Length: 282
Length: 306
Image (cartoon, rainbow over all chains, first blue to last red; front, side, top):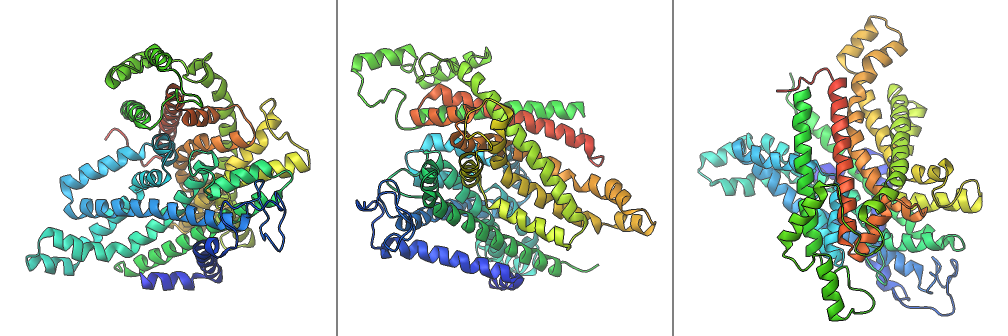
């Protein structure tokens, strides 16, 4: 994993800029909402719907709430929900793929058949179904979204397991009489964690998008809580007179997506290059 | 091939039935009901309402009743919009969503594949790099960001195009562009990668060594194989555009299917949500089937009916 990160870092100056941007966004999402002098739903009666100023750097919304605080509180919630969903998808996808790949045969066939059947339903479609069922509880909703977005990961991990399964160290463990669960947990899974994490990062932007999409429609995070989807929806309603209400959260969402996409691509490139180098020469 | 398509069709029908079943029970399991309004209804009135809509029956009986109605093409009455049946609401919304979605898909696939092919045929050139950067930017611009921006610039500020409503083809332009943008970028990236890869393939090297002119190589040897992945991407793209149109329908006040879904979900209008979900699922499955059929015709390597 560290080698992969180093290779991704060496990819280009552009990747390094995106990595720095992402770190800054995450750091500010953690710090800014609490460091700001304004609360998330605190109303400044002297500044209702005002543009950016020294007092409110990102301006205020139509209820007089500080947009800088709300944008970063939104970042915190949006990113947390996205991480929650991604973590759930990794927690299901990695063991699922590893078990299918390691045991092979009929188990593998049945498990991958199930994955193929679920593929027939598009992701967005599953998401809107889940919204109807879990709409009132966003955390539950994103656990559910994670629980339907592990299919790609399971496929990748299965492929990796098939390769790792035949390595000498696995054979050695088997020869020493280690039980199958031990081999799986101690030898197989640790060795495919790097690639698995790379592909998990690739599911992250999808979950960020799902959050913004659902909350924009009013079906996800609800006022007075802030998330990027909620803020952009508010901003879109007020954009005619108050551009800042849309501009700040929209820019944050778009640049975060750009950074996450770029880093994911760089990591995947690094992984593919390593795979090509490791492949036996003819 | 006919046997293959028949089998795929049967699987699609099974999937559809599974979707209907899951959706039916998921919605009933959700907290809240269609008659929880601002004001609490008198118990007697609520009991009568529930009886009138058969909500007092056991779930499994309601499910059977629903399937029976569905078999006759009846999606039931809307719980909230009292004077309308779900069929009427969907009949009014579907053409709008299909127009916007279809236009967006044509735009995304047409322009995206063209841009990707242009970039991929000359890898490393300035045009290629420009298109690659634009595609990366496009992927980071979801409709919830682009749709309000386009409305602000082209409708409110410049006044060139209408900001909302669904009356003329001009009303469809902004929503379709906003919806299409990320998928245009995705098509461009996919095609670029495939074309660049196909350029290095042995049969293309041979064609070049034979001295074939560049345009002949591109048209006969590179593009036919390189465009196949884009064809199979049509399925998921269409599904995402169709469901994604909810956002642009909100922003541009289009009376489409997506708005009915969102309203239905907010109001716990069981029949309306189920109806829209079923229509979405049917469209998506049918489109995927059509893409599969197209694919089998295009790719000679696929020997079907194994």
